[in-house]
Length: 387
Image (cartoon, rainbow, N blue to C red):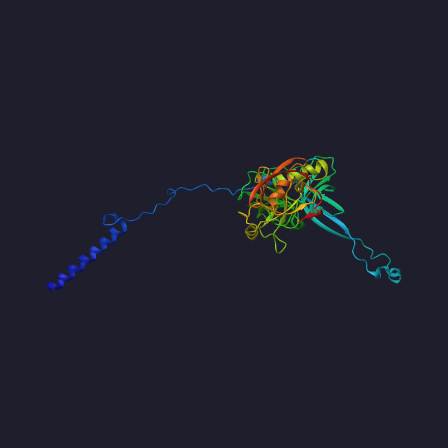
């Protein structure tokens, strides 16, 4: 019996000890000592504190400021379709007369932006190119005929004029110098002809080139939904200021896939002012045809890098030829501006004033040389080149 009692006392003592140990480990582990326990620090509001709910951001003020200056553009033109010989058959015409002599017309739609209260409208060239009739629908649902003041196919811009006796609402031009990837932007236009529509997105990229859309490219890329009919419409910032003209989309289906391109307002403003003032756009011209330097070409020509524009051709009697530029030269600098590639070269040369003189830094046979060229006015591209 004594051993049995001792066993019972031992079991009870062990049970009590384990219970105490469990309580200490759970509630006061620091009493055990022997090792340092890690501590997780978190940020937490005080008990009973209720944070005020934040109202969702709204861009209504920006839209209200810009939308009245965004217009819908309806265009049409007569199409001369091949005439079936049956329509000229005397027997056929005796029965049907001229019932089948119906003029064929094709129509399209786009958007535009009123840039001046006197009725000047900025849009894309491809919206109005080759069209016989142009009609502009204002935000107040009034329709006005418009005429083309001038176009610039190389940037895909056009300026229209509405004849009106009232002062029209006009857009406020913004600045693209401070535009950043990630900034919120809004696109306003007339997608698929459903009426004025606003979509929101961000600036996805800046300075997009090599897209094959225009001769001169420096696009703002955005994921704001842009669809057919948005062309020529406004891309605005959150203050309602114009920062771009919506121009093109990348799509395999014809609808928005989140990759849209807009012409920066700085380019649009420069082109627009020249068109309004002179009816055309004047650009600099030095008379060279440039080629992208690939790694293979860099190795073949023993060039230190792929930076620069390889001169593939020189215009006969042009400014560059007179200055001594030769095919196979590499243009690396124009004035004080470095040349990264042929697109950069085109954009720099376009901004040069005809009649001015500018130094060109060239790489020839492994050494740098400098020549001075007198800038000419850019002619039509159909010219003969030396190769």
